[in-house]
Image (cartoon, rainbow, N blue to C red; front, side, top):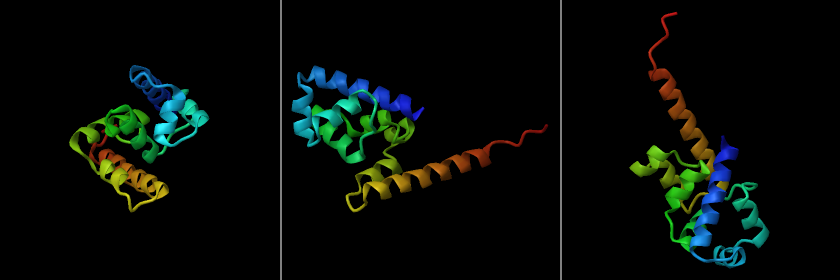
Length: 123
């Protein structure tokens, strides 16, 4: 599922880059990443960090939240509501690793609460 999300993100980024009439090299320069790295993102081979997604969003003039959703970092329903995930991703005081750890813990709590809220199966 994550692999599919990364592929979808890459396709979307390529579409947006072409619509903006930017070459791969031009976009890579604007974002501050290497040309091969950006190419790997577009081909679904690499998952970019939240910071790289923010830079891509800025360069392509698209919503960073939309890129987070397409990358599978943020759940679509949460992105619309503003969400805890977006606050974590926006916190400049946290490292990338800390952000992902917090997101994982938060997601596990939500999954646990959802499981506990389901009615028991009267088998």
